[in-house]
Length: 370
Image 1 (spheres, rainbow, N blue to C red):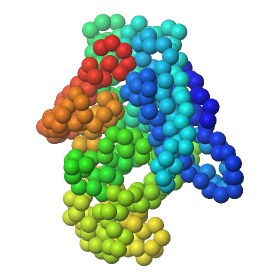
Image 2 (cartoon, helix red, strand yellow):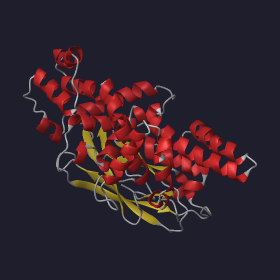
Image 3 (cartoon, helix red, strand yellow):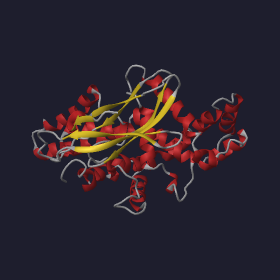
């Protein structure tokens, strides 16, 4: 692979993987990124997934999202890593070079409306902004700038920051991608030492949410078909993973499988809901994935997990880490914000949850000096 070079203001860089040698059969390769002098929080967004090469297909690509900040940092480096999905051995490793801007913003980049909005596309939807969406949300900020009274203008700007941020979590696009990925983990796995609270860990969430959202722009041509294709592929892959197979061995009967899934998800299904899961096995091909999907998309489960997912995404989206990672040591912060959200019946504005994360030094330091 060649060395890839991009600029800090590019938004994203496309990484092309070339397949050399005999290309007569199908092949897979896992890709991931790792910071060297560039930071996965502040300079680029972690990218991870799997590329599938069809017979005689010799090139595949994936995007790496680039973050704009207001720091003078010079040239920074990250690594692109290709691994054999069977053996786990590294088959290739190359550099990604991020060139600093000639001129940096005089203020924290998160205070620049266009950069603030663009980063939300990166952090919540896993893609660069589409022009109409970017223009719409920047227009919300422009409305505040047209208010003559400075104090009213500042209050308007603060309100728009919170509303724009929450809108990305509440969007159809995130609800059907990232939120579904969250529910897959919560429906599949109980709390354990290796999986605190039964939650997805940041790195695996990033990998899976990027896979399910790849090429999806709600409202774009064919987005629903692409999303359905991605969703089916992720569920098919998920039920073949060692952690899933250990908990739900293939020897389970359809009834045992359904009951175990509902129990893990903490659901008491109606007879009709349970039978619908069991009936997926009338067509055995892909039945385990389809049955699992019915539980992950259960309406009551979706309602129950909405607020915990909202809180978790504050950590994943804004702070780019697990809730119990440094500088935290446990889930006390997560529990605090979940209780605040419950106290105000889900009203994130009155709970001041989104506002607190946006104003935190940890968030602002991603893009410049606080």
